[in-house]
Length: 489
Image 1 (cartoon, rainbow, N blue to C red):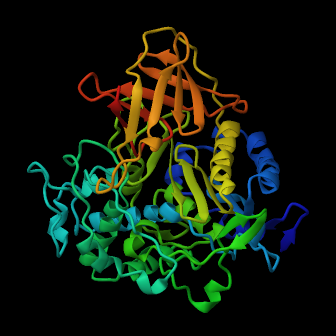
Image 2 (spheres, helix red, strand yellow):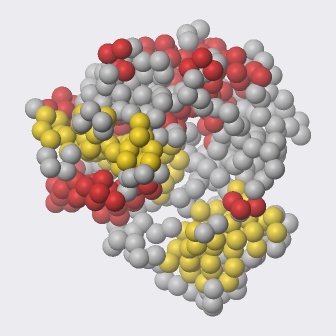
Image 3 (cartoon, one colour):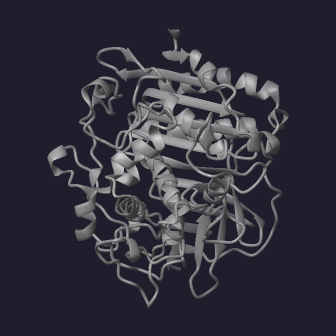
């Protein structure tokens, strides 16, 4: 049964019945249902409905899908707004395809882990063992498979990865050979998010399995899990194309549909399309120790490795797991991945110890990018509330301008994108990037928390200064995939 209410919400109730009773015995032992309060879980759908209704009214959200799972069942799978505004086609969580962007990488890391389980790939091996072209070593150190999982290959970022013209979307297996990024630092020494590195992981899967990557993902991941509306193929079959949500920008206050985005040159890093219902099945499999119903795609040990810590730019702050990002270290531990294309903004996070997971995807104007983040934080703050830390006096950190390490080093850096850190009173800082300004207060040695009127329960953003006088840096708790280096005191 599908129903559309006055907020543009579509809910498909039978999905919970389709996947109920699929909880993993391993997960059931680790995370009893009482770990999340029943009242909080019961109130969550109405809470999400209210937040998204407000975002549709104020944040340029044209359409959205939200899926929540807990202890082996779907507790919420809803569509909001429209997949096609001009034709008034409502989002259907079981039918409408969204573009999850870099959330696609989680499928790629699972595929690579399958090859590790089968003994075809080693985590500590030089990636060149599995390639038909060469990734040069840096300072005598090769890039390892583990560096790909941790986003520590030491590479420049790369541009030119998207197009509106499918004829220009070259196969990633040929594009990557002619677009090897410049090496900036030794592998294994610094996390800097790498689309190329994730695409390289998919390239390895294709090479060692002998199957084209999109075929491999369908045969060994999507179809076994019943994710029949998920694919890496960007030229969709006609039946799927009719169900795809459109991307939008806002022009003169109206939603204007945009051409399809093609990311085929880095396919394993961001080309997927999926429904909310399919993403529920993926989350349930990950929370079920690699198993959904009678189908197993990974061992529990491999799933635990994917969600375990690999590398953090600064000790004590969130870092990378293996492909997954760490969103919260404890209370509970949260791991997941965000994704942004030009037109779609998505997030997936899991609380593995509590059997809880959320997937969000939105399309619309520029405001929908922030709306995705706001909804994510609203859910975390409601389900896993925190209190702000105690403010503490102390000496200021190294002030000045800090520049993110993830950028294309073949192009001049734009100082307008640097963070300007300046004092704002005793134990307080101001951080500006362009016209955006935030305030921070000291809560411990070199550690600051954002001053905010955040909803009760947070979450509360933190940053830490580190690196000493030789290489002053700062990192944010919400950005485990990058760090910032001092460029001008």
